[in-house]
Image 1 (cartoon, helix red, strand yellow):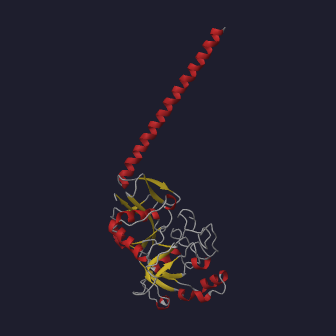
Image 2 (tube, helix red, strand yellow):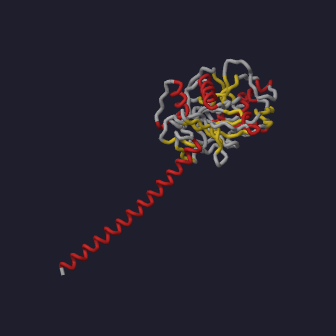
Image 3 (cartoon, one colour):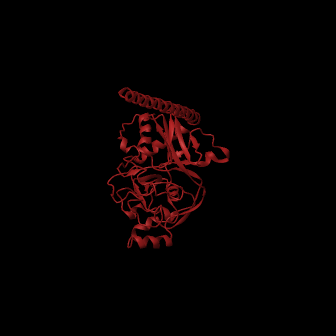
Amino acid sequence: MFGLFTNLILCTFSEIAFQVSIIKLKINKYINVFAILAGIITVISTYLWGENCTYIRNDILKKYTCKNCECSCIEIPVKLIPSGTYQIGISDNLQSRIDSLFPDMNAFLIDEKPRHTVILDSFYMSEYEITNDIYYCYAKEKKIDFSCSASEMLKPKSNISWYEAKDFCYWLSGKTGLSIDLPSEAQWEVAAGNDIIFPWGDSYPTINICNFNSTYNETTCIDTINNTSTPFGLINMAGNVAEWCSDWYDESYYSNFNNTPIGPTTGNRKVVRGGSWKDNAFDVRITKRNSYPPDTKNNKTGFRITINNYQFKNGGNQNENFKFSSSGNAFIIINGM
């Protein structure tokens, strides 16, 4: 009897061992299949985007991010703003809506009037502000002392003067052959939204849609608040960091406007738009005009970039550093830094 019981136990363990070996074979088979698929994906990504980087899709940021490569590539998603005739500044109707949210503030709206026409050629604007991870690659190549913790890499670059932001544009233009610059004041306002108080509409901002009024006490990563998209698909156009524009500031400029979106040729202060994490709700409005001396550096001002679209017209989009994804989004891409 004991021998029979022992044989049963041995048979049971043998069956278990056999089944385990079958499972291992199946697992190894699937591992091999996944390895083959990964190899195919790597080959395709290398063919499309260059051998230095493997790209993974990030649906929150709507961008490509590098994996396992330090500054061997840069990717900046951009959105197209079509050419056309636009209106900027405060209309009578818009002022009445502003008054309903911010009573007795009319004296602070003088430089935002009158509402007037500007004619713009089409251009691309970066979907969000230039972030620390992108600026790091610029600083590394230019041998500029710049450090940033991993948790701050996707925060907008701040503590940057207008001159430094402009130099970044020169550098990126040289790297890509694209015509890259800071947005003009007219380009910025058109991109932010038409005849509305804030990029999301007329509703008063909350911490769920805007980093303002020192609620977070600092800048936030660009994906922290990502539901404030403008009609053109731009994010963080209100709050977080205010943004340098290319134009000189002139308080009376809107009163002496013409149809060209070119600002004053001289001045002492550069235009800053959008408001920041420190500013109150009134100061993160679309039409709010602010300014600083161009050498100003503070923890609430950054920048985003534009690409003049003239070089892509009439089939001229042959630049290897400018790509379109299958979803129709456009990207500035630099490989092999």
